Image 1: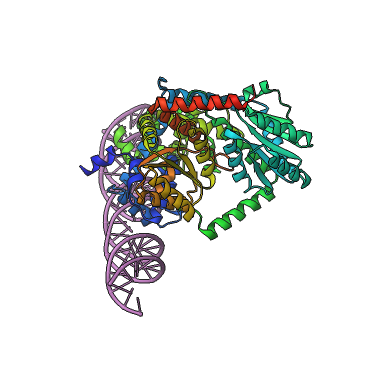
Image 2: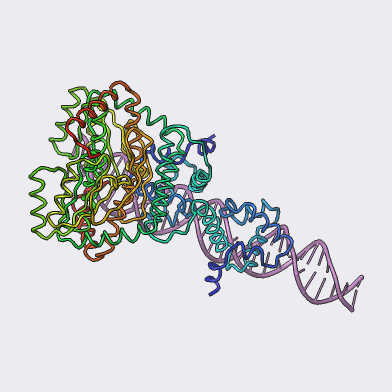
Length: 284
Length: 284
DNA sequence: GCCAGTATGTATGAAAGTATGCAGTCGCCG
DNA sequence: CGGCGACTGCATACTTTCATACATACTGGC
């Protein structure tokens, strides 16, 4: 009876529902993140990976309701298995959501086929890293992208600031950054291309800044001059556009930035870690 | 030297080339036919499946040139592993970027295959649409997601506001929204789960709000109670995590919200269009 | 038929892996 | 401050799994 329960309930379900101790949470975390490989490790090696004792792993399995660690491992293997076999299964698209996901998959695929992209990202990353200050422009829907970039970017380098408006105050801000040593700026410019954002980009270039723009394919139609233009495809299946590719490219750009100045970036990241530990910022 | 040979040569090559006795041939046959599962069985159970003794299996491994059955099993697992990952891989991955894109494609695929998801999104969309006010929680990295959601969400319904801090002022804000009719709130809660954000979610629930959380898989390990939990997988190939699936789910949720109250949403969108045209907000 | 060589199962000890009693630590409540 | 309960690591007993010695069975050459 008990063992039949073990096979019917999903491992993941148990992991989410069970009441776990701190050490057990860390184990759960590790297992979820490494399920493919964790499914075949011994309690011993999981323990050492996570940094707890072997008995803790053993107890963890029973806390989840399994009779033994071995039984848990079997369930885990079945889970990991179903996980990969899901990949092989092609299914018919019916709903808008799966349509949308399908489109985004195609968009990402297109991205990975784009040959010159890799090199361009590296080039742009190095370029904006070389600027003493880095204004990041993003208005309306693009504001959140600019802020996302700036939040992470600030862990890699200093002097990043978001410009999410287009009034005289914003222009003043931009000019001040130029006088402080900004040579490049980065603009997120997604449909439907706010006129004000375009104006701001023009203003920046007139002021002598080089501009790197992250946008989508149809941006070309706007006819705005840029120094670097990275384009992605957006997903259009749902009420509002989805921007999975933009998310990936943002991260890729950050990666390239860090790559171009390993020391500087490493320092920033370590500092953040120290600070996070000190102030006990995160769970687990 | 021997062990390096063991890892370089493919298992399959050895299976076909080695000179084997009748019983060993049967074992080989079984292993080739069931490699996915055989890779994790004990010598004992392989033996009983094939109908030979356990030492035969043990000897079989050394006949193939492995130092021990354990080493053979590891090689087998690696083989089975590469076998399934070959399914996902169409081209050779070399750079971190194309790795990362590949991962995100897998993440999206996993999403589209998740059966209950569609229904859950619809349910959550309708639920948060029914709340007279809608606080959206997002701290640190999740702030931009919350803002993205709120920016678009405000075109679909009114009364959305972002809570991107966790001080008394934020709690005051939350309580005011409750008194104004909020019954649900939405929280973006991405790794590494800020403690403050978790606290805020607990506070919200204690204050009587239902909480829908958008997070990633390992959130389970945080052990936070929620009323609805939507999980995606993040991409981990680059310096910072990518969140293509989160972007899609955010949009899907907005879509579901609009679907649950077509009139209300339509009205909001039209109003935005009128306003945009009037003020000449966009290019083209 | 006998012998050498090969093949295979049984028995057994060693090693690896897992579970549990016990004690130390920490936080909480009276 | 002291007792209590939860948590966790250590030591250890127990279980499973693996490798090897030995015995038995089969094969082909003589």
